[in-house]
Length: 361
Image 1 (cartoon, rainbow, N blue to C red):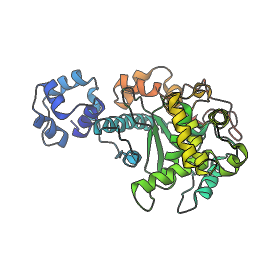
Image 2: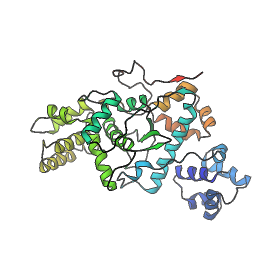
Image 3: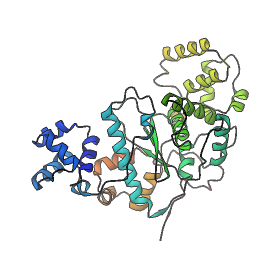
Image 4: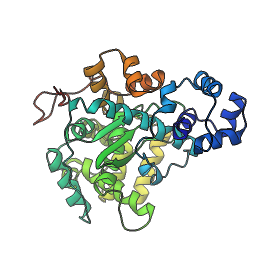
């Protein structure tokens, strides 16, 4: 048995070594030694492990995957995210990524040609990235995830029911850029998260200074990328009101709270006015649920689900067997991805395709 896979299954189930040990009638030390590869399990133990966890036998026997670090989970200020939640999210994301790898060898998939950002001013970085992705300099971005997938970025959704405080994280594996998100969030929040993580990827998680500096730069990039200064100078008018920001949200696909923060960054409002707007936002409950979000175009990732449909149709049990994955978990993960029905019309240069996949001969 591969001890790494035992630990992965345990963390997906959010169990401590002691809790798993108790459910299997062994000691915590036995689980620790198994995970470290210091002892081999008996056939009886492996049988009980499969029944208790629901993971197939082949999951525990397959080789370790490439290292899937926490990426920018280490950078984000996830104050509500426990170590257990981080482990769960990271390992479920790994299941999604391994399913992606199981599929990608059989199709053509674009190679990422995104630029690398090294010290450019935020305004230059955002403009360069917009140009690289084929977006107009001062137009709204409303299908960011699909455009990234079309440009070789692997975007994955993880089901996060019962987990509060998670939006997304990013990393690179073998030069492949990967963004992982909680797709249950509204499109405007996902769009801001993805833009934030895009900065981490383009700078390859390297910013001089503290982790707070890294986060600040990513936030500033997301603001300029989604809400360019020149465009906002034309769109925003004083006095800044919640109704004006609500109208801008529907045009630019960015939350009212993010627009208020951008208005402060661009000196349309001062700190006192910004605080006043936030008080009003909280008073009407918009800090938890903003109006209009349901009417925005979907920003959930699509590629993994599209690949599964293309190669397996509705037979996800067969895909789970091929990936040595827990069927229920794989199905939940794929279901978190966009089915494609809510996608808006393709943008310029996308040639009418939802995603540019072609099965290889």
